[in-house]
Image (tube, rainbow, N blue to C red; front, side, top):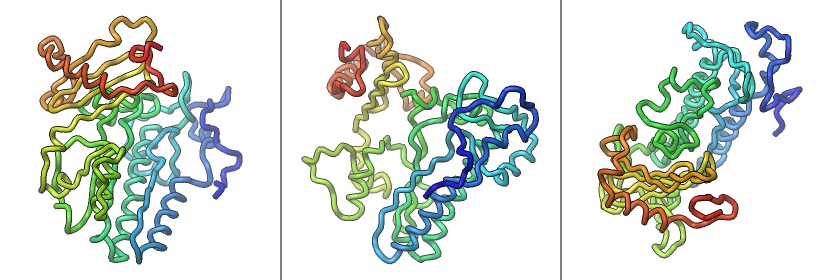
Length: 325
């Protein structure tokens, strides 16, 4: 469905020259009449209503919180009333679209997302299918590095973790995962099991009684033992998780046991230290504050072997230091 935003709001644009940056009305040109996240939420509710009498799968990709900072004015009121020091984002030096109160906008988007998810959960309750529906909520990456638009220091967005979006340090890749299934998953229970998005296909297939064959090429582990806090946890505890990222200067990371090995700058030309592995004991040092590679050369070597084994050269996403590219 087309949004009724005329003229269309540009994704990247500056305030026109000569306008008063301290006047809230100067930012009105970046406000739409239609709000896409609201339409998406309504469509999700319609889907549940249509399929409530039979098994269904709903993938609900929210586009908030995200930059550009767009949120209906009525959602801003509660945060503007708090009297925050909230300097306008004018896009001087790059970014997305300007906003008069960026901190309030970001907080409002998160609160609005909470309301949208609440609507879905309430619908499941009203239709009497909550006890037979598993709800999974998670995110794709850590807080953005665009500080002028999203002040991660003000919000303490990643807590004590290191790194932001685009980084394979914990702050860039460790995200919340909330799973709700009344009568099946104990309320308030937690798990320290390390998981990734690749785990959800085998997990969901297992939950519906269609486990994936062991010889399948699908990666990932069945997380059911962690969800139900019973069964065999050994394979989940002892697993290894590998990630590589050609973007943001090129990175590579491996998690195994309590350890994490990470490389940075793999796509930086003439980087003599690109293949150096930093080592962190993430169980005791989740903030990755102390590189202990020199203290554990045998563990570093194991990380090196695992990284080499897991990496597959890619023409689409080449990594200079690994592919001699």
